[in-house]
Length: 90
Image (cartoon, rainbow, N blue to C red; front, side, top):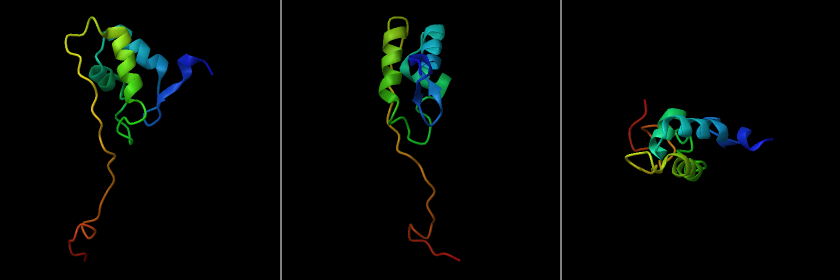
């Protein structure tokens, strides 16, 4: 496997090459890179790919981006029944 084919965001299946191409084309901050590629928006909330997305944005678009906003961590979401929260089930 070549480095360009390496999957960085497993949840959204975003490759290193996709991140790199997008960052070069749009001179993205980490937040913009996340929004354009969906890296970090999957089930894990960016826990596995956040640092690499930040690094790619810093390497490629750091000098040209006006706002350098890093990504935030987001907890995974799963459905919860109201009965589990103390409600009455029917």
